[in-house]
Length: 338
Image (cartoon, rainbow, N blue to C red; front, side, top):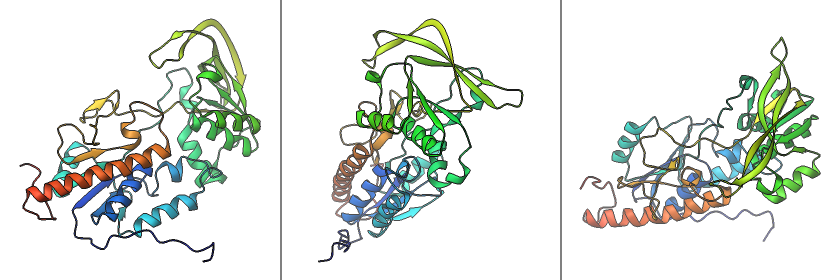
């Protein structure tokens, strides 16, 4: 057998199962969709972006996951009979409830929201980290020219943004209010960044972005910090020393994590969608959720999102089988209100 041969995915020999809606085509959504389709269910995916694949397509730099690889994974899921509707967003609670009535089950794999704003003077001049990485991956010619890029944050997205800045020819510095020991980025990512020539300024908390008369960034003012007692995350809390320093730069990028779901009408757990052990949202008989959207504890990752999708699909399949039996063995639409 040729090493170039492609092994076709397993396709179920029936497609008369239940109708399932998956919201989001990132790793968790695609994983759930694939496993549900293999069980014979008719799966539709709604993706709000014009490009499928979630952060695998837009939020991970190409040297880690090339775009064509991410899109090949999407095509493999499509080959299972999954229908993917792009530029299709779940509008709100009313539309979710309508979808739950129209489909036999709904799986929310919506990830998280935007990168939070920084409430400091000059914050309007700061660029969003995910947007910066997206541009670097999809439209690198449109990446803003800069001689020195400062990235605020110390997670994997911060390192990705600094890496793309460095590879575009700019000097890159990551600013973090704690030390290397408290970084949320993986250790191998930190070592990779050092190898790329990325600078790190630890114990520095952004206090102001300075701009010239034309509105161009000229520097980032940082409050010098020291570590105090541990906070709720188990990491030592940064405490201001009263001293300030200025890092000269012409572009500032914020990569300080993503916002949760505060204000949502869904039940929440510390800003994430609340689910029980079967990935079901409490009080909603046929609505499930997984992936980063429910990651109230632990570190979010592609691997964990894919595993969530697989496990959630098994729970959804069990639920659908039970609902069909209670409805008299009908594999079609079931009554969710009974």
